[in-house]
Structures are given as structure tokens and as C-alpha cells.
Length: 468
Image (cartoon, rainbow, N blue to C red):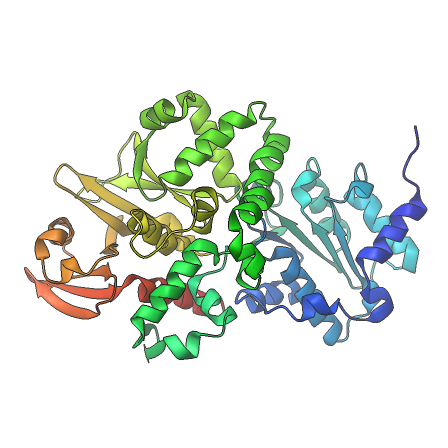
């Protein structure tokens, strides 16, 4: 049987690292806008006082590889030697069977690098290497002068393994789909549509135009490539479903977890995607998808590991969690996936409420605060978002998400929100609307009404501020 030669591997090295000859990344990457998370990621890469690898995690097609190229470009601008930077995509078949240490040794030999040389080495899509975390930890320990960067699309699986085997040696960095704030910046419409009221508050005088862009964001705005491609926007189903969802469901998850019945997994995900933002149960999922409850539990873990979904747990009116989580909500990590599966939506689509809620939740995906978000449900009512203070185990704030202005004139529509606020001694609360901004006092509770598109922008922008 023929084996891949060392020369072929080195040839691939040179192909994947054009800056060795040009001292710059390719123009097609230089011209792409930087993710808002770029500066905070670059800081981790530049950090030399702590000997840690940076593990960049996130779903497919959100710009992880491009952000790595932008990082390489910045290092080159800062004066790093081009031949001291190695990029390797472990998805490339030619690297199959090669250990991380073998790859590093080949790189060292090619340019006669020493152990004390300051190198930057990138392993893209590292989750395809068995026991990657053990090998990477060994390299971090062996070469303290080398900066290792690893990327992967199975976010939770990577995070779990990095915490188990890379404690003290890995720093995790999560790159989510585009936030609404990033989307508006990418299409250069922030200045036209958004006004800054105070440091962390925003408004708009063009709510109808902003809502039009919000709809576009729901349909295709979570993926950087889709934002700049009319072809992808016209056929988002083919791009997002085939190139993102299907690759994860039919290739990534089966290869990582040994799943045999991929059609069963696909059916479950389709059911979840259709019901994003709605409360579901294991029994209900089992009946609608035809998959056993035990299998569903495993598949939910896998889908969350691939950053396709986020599970949000239920609390009661007194903010107490249930001992048995039989009911919960599952949100798509990116609302664009639903449009790709079931067709684009418009302002008056029946799923606008659920998709608006999905978009709002998705803004928190980079923040650790997302694990403090719950929804409340009891016999007489429900509240969409409750933020639980982990120290006091009490709610700091709550919000009701609506794609309608009716609650502004009919307080009966937010009766449950007012009841929950009184029960938990909250004096203020939030209700999102379609177009209206105003503040009212209802039964001694100060209620701020704000358009959903503005609220979505505000969350993403403020979380991004905290990252800078």
C-alpha cells in the first residue's frame, strides 16, 4: 500500500502557508471584515506570560478560520517572521494519521527551528484527531516558547475535553454566529439605523427599516459568507442546509460519537428546528420524531456539542428549578437554520414570535451569562426570559418577547410577567414589541417597552463591549 511521503506533506505545508513566500495572507482574506471578537481573541494569542494553547470553538461557517488568518496577518504586521507561523487544517486528508508532534517536528526540520524559537502553530478543526487534547497538552508542556492555536466545530465536546485534560494548559474562546450588531456593521447600516442614547442604551428613528434588516438577519444573517453573497441569500437552503447542517449531522457527529442511524438524528433535529423557541418535552419529542427518550437525551447532548442548539431549563413562578427537567425549551444557535430548512420568513409569518425569541437568545451565546438564562412557566402563565443570579439564586431581571405592539395598550397580555415580577420582588421589567418604544408603570411595576430589533442589537452590542 502506498504511503504519503514526507515531501508531499511539506509541499502541502507550503501550499497552506503562502506567507512563507509572500509575507502576507491572501487578499481574499485581508479584504473580509474582522469579527467584533477579533481583538479579544488576538489578545489571548499575544499573551506570552501564561503558557497556554488557545482553543477557538464555534459552529461551522461562523468565521473561525478567517479569524485565524486575520490573526496571522496581524502577527506578520507586528514583525513576526513569516516562516515562524504554521497553519495546518486537520480536515485535509494528507495529514490523516500524522500526530501533532510529527507535524511540529516536520515544521521545525523544514526551517531548522529551535526549541527556544518563538513560533505560532495553528491546528484547524482539531477534533478530528483522536485524543487531540492529550497530544496538545503534551506539546504545550514541551514547547513553552511556541504559541499553539486550535480550532474546532464541536464546541461543547472540545470544551469538555479541554477542561478535563487541558486544565491550566488551554484557554477556550467561543466564536458564535454573527450577532445582529455585527450584521448591521458588516452591511454598514449602524450609523443610519442605530442611535446611541447612553453608554449601553440604543434606539432608532427608522424602526421599519431596522425591522426589514432584522428579518434579513433571521433569514441568513448569522453567517458572514451569506451576508456578502447574493447567491447564498437567494438559495440559503442549499448553502446552509447542505454545507453546514448536513455536514454536522451526517459527518461530524457520526464520526465523533459513532452514531449509526443518521436519519434518526436528522429527523430529531428537523423537529427541534421547526419548534425552536417553543416548550417541548422528552415524551413529546419521542412521539413526534419516533426516537426513544434515552436516545433523544444523547442526541440533544451531541447537537448542543456541535453548537447547533441551546437547551434552556424551566423554573416556576418562585424561580425554583424542577428536580426533573421533563419540560424545556430548545433554541437553534442561529435562527437562519430554520429558514434554510423550511423557507424564508416575512414580517407576518406565524413563527416570527418564536424566531425573534431565538434571535434574542442567540446574542448571548458567547457570554457565560447564557447559563443563567431560564424561562418561567406555571399553571397560569409563562415568562420568556429570566436571568437567575447564581450567587443568590434569585432573578435579577426578566423579559417577555413579543413581535407585536398589542401589549402596549392591553396590559392583560403581560399579566403573567407582572405577576412574576411581584412574586420575585422585581420593580422593573422589559417587554419587546414590534415598533413601539415607551415606558409605563403597571401595578407598581415599571415596564420598558422596546422594539425586538433594538433589544436584539442592544444585547449583542453590549456583550461585545464587554469583550473589548
